[in-house]
Image 1 (cartoon, rainbow, N blue to C red):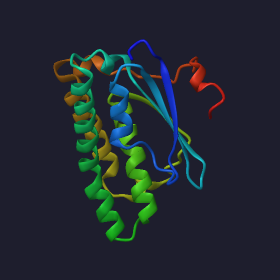
Image 2 (image 1 turned 90 degrees about the vertical axis):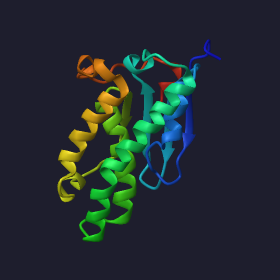
Image 3 (image 1 turned 135 degrees about the horizontal axis):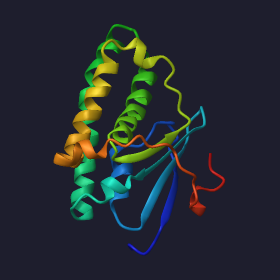
Length: 173
C-alpha cells in the first residue's frame, strides 16, 4: 500500500548483507527501508532507495527489475577478481562471500541507487584483491549510467548520512 511507510527488520543468520531480492523489495510502494540483523559478528545493514532513484520513471515492477539487473551486473564485475584472489589463497571463502555482498551494496550506494549503512568491516580486503579498487570504481560508474542514463552525471551527489527519523529506525544500530 503506497500510503504505508514501513521499515522492515529481518534476520540474516549468515551475517551477509542484502541480496538482490532484499533491495528489489524497496521498489514497491509502502516499504521505506529494510534492515538485516544477524550473524556471529552481529552485523547490521540498512538500505533505502535514494530519492533520485525513486524518481526514475517506471512501475514498481520495472524498478525492481532494474535493481535486480544492477545488482547482478555489479556482482559480475567484482566476482571474477574475488574468485581469482580466493584461488590464489589471498582471501578466505567467508571474506569473499561476505565482502562481495557488502561491496555490491556499497557500489549501488556510491552510484546513487540506495542509501546503505552497515557496521560490517571490510578490513584490508580491497587491498588484498589485485585490481579490486579499480573494478569497484568502474562498477560505480557503470551502475550510475545504467540506473540514470543520460542524467548519470547529475546524480553525482556526495551524500552524508542524515539523521534517522522514522520510528522503525529508532533504537536499531
